[in-house]
Length: 189
Image (cartoon, rainbow, N blue to C red; front, side, top):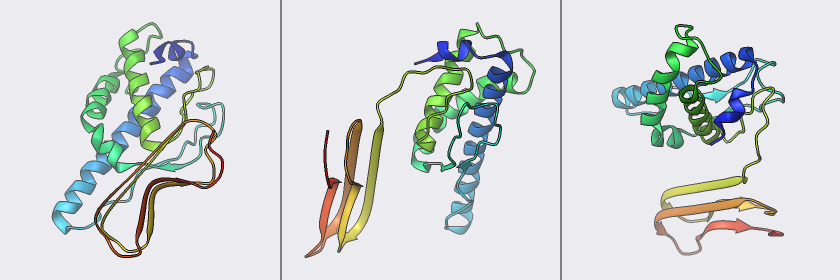
């Protein structure tokens, strides 16, 4: 946990950062709800996925590449996201002043950021903040009724650092089908 790094932000960046986290969380929760309602009503795919698209150039020191939300991660953290969204609401809506020494606010904002980083697969470091680098993690999952070809949870041309996890769950692998959790073509280490 790195909530202390949020405390060193300028009040403008911290305020905008809390609003950003609140809005992103709300958008994810709303889309999840809309998607579930559409699935119930239509039996089909529902609404478009949420895409992270940062347009505020002063909020982040570097460009944050657009990314699609991983709906499985949203589902896994739905209860936490809902609770954290409620905690951030009075701050994001200007009802309660943002105080950089408010430990509960900083820990909540950091927890939301950590979940959003998992949802989008991107680091979200605000302007003026110094964070330690975390281990890069890559994870891939495949679920299939039947596999007739070549399937891997993760395929990489090389792995130089970090953690790689891959899994495949299949009902049947037909003759000639191949399955790999992780397949690395090239150097490891």
